[in-house]
Amino acid sequence: MIAVLVAAAVLLACAAVVIAVGVILAKKVVKAVPSRRTLPVTFSNGLVTLPADHRTVADGEYLLRLEEDFSLPPVRVGEVVEVHDGQVVRRVHGPAVERRGAGRGAWIAHKYAGPDEIGPFQVVQVPVADDELREAWLFKGDPTRWVIHVQGIRTSRNVTLRTVAIASEAGATSLTITYRGAGDGPPARAATLGAEEWRELRDAVRFAREHGAKRVTVAAWSMGAALALELLRRDPKAVDDLILICPVSSWPATIQHGAEHAHLPRWTGSLAGLTLRSRAGSRLLGLPEPVDVRALDWTGPSSISVPTLIIHSQGDEVAPWNSSVKLAAGNPRTTTLVETTASPHGFELTVPDPVAQSELYEWLINRH
Image (cartoon, rainbow, N blue to C red; front, side, top):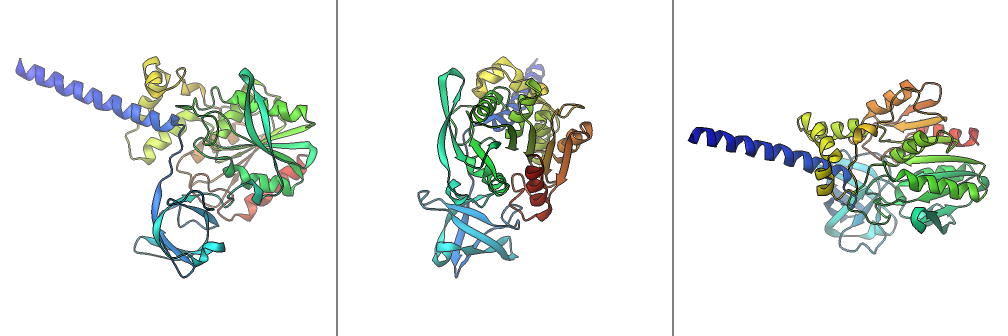
């Protein structure tokens, strides 16, 4: 009898651990609150030294947001000088070149600190459902050619400024939006992974049309692609073309990819999906309704109804490269896939890649 009770207790304990793992992974997926990991940094002689990893050793120009005073402009960091003993030394540009001493900072995957670095812009209010307004940045260009830029989850609109810069160079008007649960959007306990947020993109497209847009391109980053692809599924003629950078085009594959990258068993990805679509799990995660991630896969054949440019890297540890390959293979008549220099998630268009930059510019010129 004691042995039976012990065995039952062990099984219950194992079940509890399994459930906990699924909940933790699911919570990580839908978490809407930004969290920025800080690193120890040391400044000296126009250089900064910090721990070396796949992000901090990437080529290109980046920003370093210092923890001690987030009101100060971020430090602009340039080329790698050397890598040794688990540390990378990079050159500092701008006023911070005179900085000395140690501290902590957050490594930022883009080089623009704010919209003013692109050029003149206006803050506008985009009406969305339920009589709400969403703040957006408007960069004026050709009034008939609009590009709507969509950030990913847990990020700011600054992420999209890399595509805004190229769209401005191409002469288009740019609207950089946010949405509920995004890093600088209205707060939410959890994101619905595009299942609901697509409506806010729909309303931004309507705003552009009402203000003179004859052609609308959506340039979407990471989870922003989920909004664009769900909008297209609901209304195949909603926009004229898409640009997807490091796109989340299949949530089941993305969750599985994340589990594997974290060295978790494959079943944890399936369990996270089960947690998301269960009523009890969704309540536990702070979701307004269960989210069936099985339905949030847009990589099937003939799923893309408009010309689409995908810019992605095989080095992406968040959004799997294979999903972009599958999306392009299933939609050969509408989709062009451009592989960038190997880079971490969201570093596309920051890691120098003249081919990707040129492809994006030519796309915007030729499609308008």
